[in-house]
Amino acid sequence: MLEKRKLSGSKLFVKKFGGTSVGSIERIEVVAEQIAKSAHSGEQQVLVLSAMAGETNRLFALAAQIDPRASARELDMLVSTGEQISIALMAMALQRRGIKARSLTGDQVQIHTNSQFGRASIESVDTAYLTSLLEQGIVPIVAGFQGIDPNGDVTTLGRGGSDTTAVALAAALRADECQIFTDVSGVFTTDPNIDSSARRLDVIGFDVMLEMAKLGAKVLHPDSVEYAQRFKVPLRVLSSFEAGQGTLIQFGDESELAMAASVQGIAINKALATLTIEGLFTSSERYQALLACLARLEVDVEFITPLKLNEISPVESVSFMLAEAKVDILLHELEVLSESLDLGQLIVERQRAKVSLVGKGLQAKVGLLTKMLDVLGNETIHAKLLSTSESKLSTVIDERDLHKAVRALHHAFELNKV
Image (cartoon, one colour):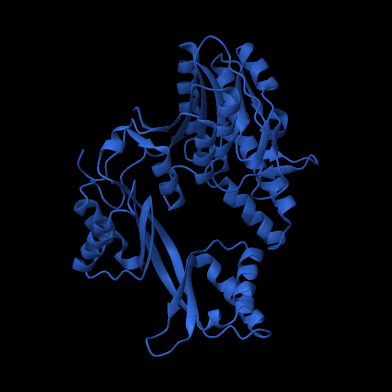
């Protein structure tokens, strides 16, 4: 449970800066100047920093040179050091500007998690120390992505975990807003690198933002959006490279998007593969063995779909999506499993991508799915798998058709228009 405390007086903002925002000494100086100006204007601020861009990957690579199968506990001990570099450098930069600041690890802040190394969940936050620092006019600079488990071991929250750290602190401190500074100016209707007509959204509802994050939008980690929604933390995405109001993620139906078209954005996910196992459903034992294998390897899958191989054969198969990077290790495990259980033929299709229309009430509007398929069909793009829900219409296509599909759908659903 979070201990919630609200300081009196000035507004309190928790501000998270990602790896590109603090990716060099020059970038750290720019952010420090921005924070100093806000401090002089009377804002109370708690900073949460990621490791400098590329640092976490470097640390994982070092571990792989020693032991590709290093224990999760030791990996957490190693990669959590990346954030300590950025928070200490930021504290120095602020102190040189006359701003009282203090760098803090997750342990010092008392961010308590469970013991699931590499993917820990925050269970409680003790705000006493942070509150004391704020009352003394000191800017706390907290290492994102990390916490401490009941045994006193360092844990990490998984990739993108600094977003979750920021939201958890904002919830516990009852901050006026949690601001996520990144290398884009907000949340867009789709990836502007694919379609230059993509439009930045001034506001977006939590339900839609969560769906977009889960479906591949990289601007916010899904866990942070869920956390903010659960604890009703106002969340804003801003650019650390340019001025602007960014995108506010807010509650209720009062946003302009609730009154707009039901499709509010297009999310994409690349580097996927389809794995089909013939005849799997002829035995529940085989199906259970597959699920156990996926769980053991921590392979996230979706579109688990029973398929008829053809109209003549009654044999059913299962087809699902997974990250292409996980295919080879999974195939090896399934081949081992086939020695004791005849799983049937394995069919792999690589270089797949998922395109998802995201919005409100989509499943109830059959015409939207028909329109989506017609648009793709007119571009000679074959939809290989489909998945629908109240907030998304997703299809799997060849990755080579991704840009063409996104631009066609973005135009057809008029997402470039206000």
